[in-house]
Picture 1 (tube, helix red, strand yellow):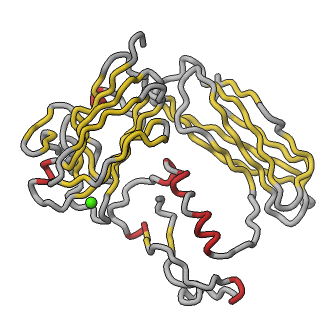
Picture 2 (cartoon, rainbow, N blue to C red; picture 1 turned 180 degrees about the vertical axis):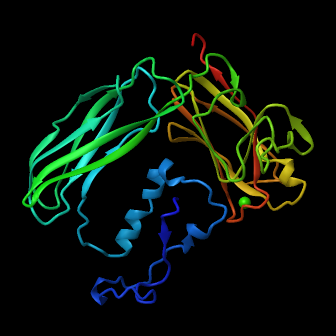
Picture 3 (cartoon, rainbow, N blue to C red; picture 1 turned 90 degrees about the horizontal axis):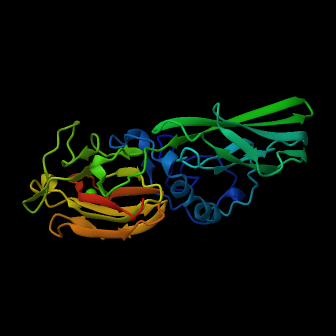
Length: 335
Ligand SMILES: [Ca+2]
């Protein structure tokens, strides 16, 4: 959730929103009160990395509001993947919506990419008339140059234009793709690889150490007094992504509440999830100090991006230091 997202609790009437009675549902809204602006544990914009998850609760809420008023798209909306491998084509779409009450003509969408990138339209990019409330979508196949440097963010920009009765209109929307680090070519501990991104609840993600408050502040990864020389130390909420480029075979680890938290309290409770290209490959039950670590052993063949997530499991983020001990990926023979 980004800092800009706020959910309200209570009925519109009790919130003093001054909405007409016939616009209100029969029951008060059942929405969790949560103001990220005052959440000191919120240190990064996760919403931008999890747009599907952010969007998921919206349709049920909309239906519970019994709100049938139209919400026309307005302007340009660009959709891009988060990762783009050098030399490999990927698909980008953009929509131009006429949210005004007047018709538009000569509607068009164009895509701007960095110099040296190949952009090829795979749909029509003009729509002629665009009546009020209508939108049209265009798609492109985009290919970064094979020599594009790794671990670099790039900007793509969609430009929507049209003629409105009062003059021309123009809307831009930018999206960001990252050329990932090279995929591993041999069996590797994740802590020896460059990650695509790393989000962590407290301080940075630690390589070969438990989570510390500051960089390098961790202690050896340990569960029940047994230490592990390799692994990743994190604190909920954490999300660390690695580029496997389809070269991986299996991902293995031992995940649990690290002794660094367990020695101080038994209260830590987190849940670990492994994603392969946003598909869930593994979800743990609630991890606790008493329950000990759990082995992870999943098939990652064909996976381009492997993501390790640790989320709070009990609405209390204290003592939630979690470690992925011996986190390791093996590669397919011949890669
Ligand atoms: Ca917790």
